[in-house]
Length: 96
Image 1 (cartoon, rainbow, N blue to C red):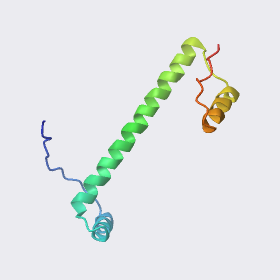
Image 2: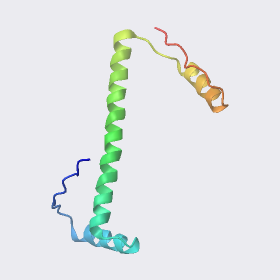
Image 3: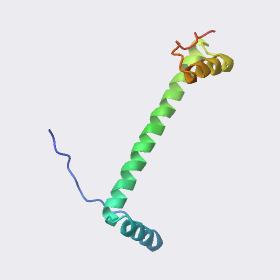
Image 4: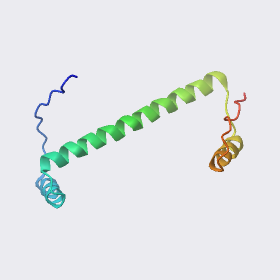
């Protein structure tokens, strides 16, 4: 298994933010370094998911523009209501 390379990176933050990080790290019994690494990791994970969702949305829009196929809101709502009731149904068919 490959070991990830870890290299130091410097960031500039204002004194107020630095103090806030220190207070929170102390309250959590962690180091400011750990807290900042965790915050960056969570931010990047969240933003990668957001970007993947945005890309999926763009692809879906382009597919709709190319084919005109869609599902009405009423059909989607009815299908979701059935799923909520525990009924495992196939999604509604697309129409042009």
